[in-house]
Image (cartoon, rainbow, N blue to C red; front, side):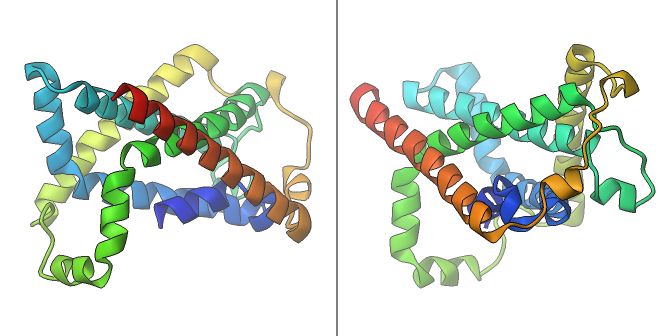
Length: 224
């Protein structure tokens, strides 16, 4: 679901800007659920990083941290320049050129990071796909990571604090949205639904993701 949502997110001509922004907000919720269900892995590997772990474990951990930061940069910058979702809720935004550049460039880096992330975990992904319904039946026995609402809220608070730290760093580097840097463009018209270009955009983004994944997989086989 995360992978499909991500590919759709970077194919704005296929979805249109309004759907793109609401899908981005839904994507944040999917990322939150993903992190909550991965919390045990996060804690275990954080301890291993500081107590000494394998080279692969350190690289995988660093990659996950980098991916989280990049995804949060995409999300935060997207909210700052929102032209549909937040304005529809009565929240005024500025289509700041610097923030839009950050949003666009971080999307490209996110594609590369997701491709490398998939490559790093390809063995697990392949095994999970082979198990298919067997794995689904095992999971149906009950959640293993979020036994209570209080547990989830505490972990969500940690994720929210980390996101706020990233947002604060971005504001220090890029500055607050400014009318002096506002783009005088009709973004809704610019990113309207165009099936032909949209499919082409999706295929291009998918190809970039696949190339990053294949290149990373080849490098991992040689060096790890």
